[in-house]
Image (cartoon, rainbow, N blue to C red; front, top):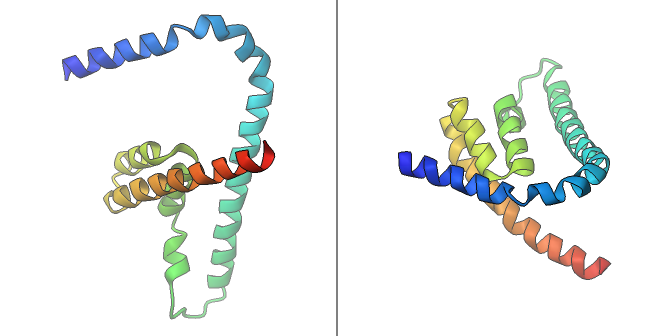
Length: 132
């Protein structure tokens, strides 16, 4: 564990060392990046909230639903883990599931995150080909 921690600190130091040369460009581009991220996370949160609201409204009428799939699928812990996998990738989703002790969501978070990476790679290549 000590060796791994030491090597991790060495990695952080070497990865961050060139940062001083990029300081001015990062400061200039910060407003654009912050705006993009605010739109990304805001849109994502609105989408998840809308789905949850629609499902809750459907089940609020008091009728017994023979297919409770959507109610289970939109449980808050599942939405949070899926959201983390969609935006942060499999590592952040697995960390969230493990930290909250949602053991049943650990493997799906890794699968969804990695499948998302695989699909997004080809989507990104397609966009590059179209908008080049």
